[in-house]
Image (cartoon, rainbow, N blue to C red; front, side, top):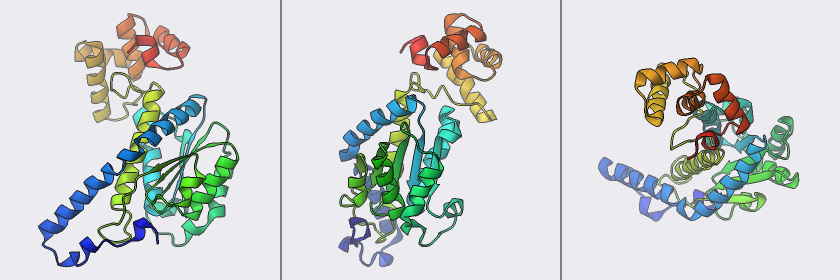
Length: 293
């Protein structure tokens, strides 16, 4: 039995606890789940640097998971285009059982290791891609077999798991282990394990895009202002970073067709949008390289 499937004596009879005690225990467990990621910070840092190098060469992020792990992987991939303007086709998630498994349980799908391999093969996995396998138990065949296949092909493989003894830790080049242990509701890995996985994936993908220059002075300058909230955020961002009046920021964004980076370069360099774009192109799109830290 894996550590994530074990039952903790402390929580026997929890159904009879006062609601306040029950909720308090769950909140405490959630905090412990995030803390469990602390010992894995070194592995996370290695994964960030290694992945950023490959993504910078044009590679993709290819996530794999089953059940809750697959849904969390899908969520992380889906957040990258709106947050960093990263092309959706370069951040893909494969969940055991296919798209239906995002909202419905597809029983038995996680046991199909060949399907995980087929997902990567069908995606045309290449040498600069990064495969990220997510599994609480660390033994899900859909994930483990796919990660083994990717590593054998020379692709960078990263694993996010909660059971230190899981086969996934050996299958991946860089395992990120958050040992969350027994759940309050035994085996319900959407609880502590899921929280730790979400934190690990958030740190991993955010770190990658910070390293790639998608963040400048703590702001997501690649964000696409696609709705009123984001347009207002973009205006505040440009006004603050360029130290100009909000109206001037709004006008700069309009001239830049909504590009925060182009608007900032025009304001900081006193140039037109075409020249700003040229400077960015020469710098590989990295705003820090054009405007400095």
